[in-house]
Amino acid sequence: MRKTINREFKLTGIGLHKGLAASVEFKPQMENEGIRFFLKDSKIPIKAALENVNSTLRGTNLSNGVSSIYTVEHILSALFAFDIDDIDIILSDIEPPALDGSSINYCKEINKVGILLKEQEERRKFVLDKKIDFSYKDSFYEAQPFEDSVIECVYENNHPLIGSQFFSFRLNSENYLKEIAPARTFGFIHEIDYLRKNNLALGGSLENAVVLSEDSILNKEPLRFKDEFVRHKILDFIGDISLMGFRLENMKIKAIKPSHNANFNFAKFLREVA
Image (tube, rainbow, N blue to C red; front, side, top):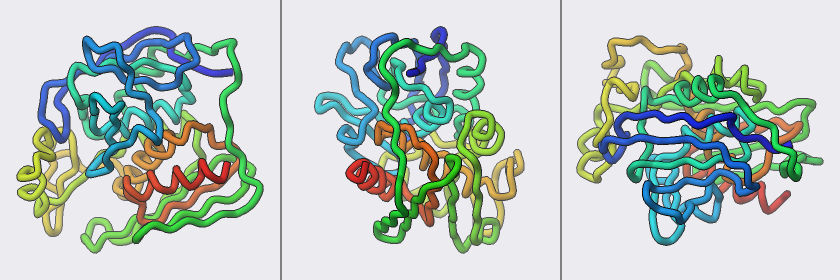
């Protein structure tokens, strides 16, 4: 059956890229309308769907043709991991709060309020019957039938704390909460000037991102995992792939050097195959 949350909850903070004070409120949705974002005081939804993606620059951004919202991938990732099909999300401004740069706080609140099973039509599932490959620029994806739902990822960077990282996990809410949700977004100190000149990372800080210098991290808090970087890439991938609108059943997906733009194009490819 389709799922929503038992009761509403709210979180507040600062938006990562726009740097604005932000709040996000999650409300149960008893209709069969999927994941819908609303800007405060607007009744026009921005649905979480591939056709509403209007930019993948340093995040996944959505538009309904009238209004745009930014950096929604962490929210979508948590909702997908917890099998939430229908929910309304009200933003006080154009970007949700970054919180600590991961999705752990969203997951904790979903656990706290609980999940409600809805006696409505069944969710849409995507099951592969053969192996498929997809490449986009420097990114490569492989999906094949499997006895469970598994996501694997390879992330490579010549930074001494990264190198080549690989992680594999079975996709369910328990594993996600433990292995993926705490992994924070990250960036490099040499990018900061460029990002801020382009009105990005205006709300970024050591409280909501891992920042790397040439040979170390600037944060007082150590890495939460030695391979935190590839785990966050998986977190983002799950949020982006959720826009396809299907649950993934009995398949293994491997993403090599994924990016938001490549994830978006892979999701489009999968939906065409479905």
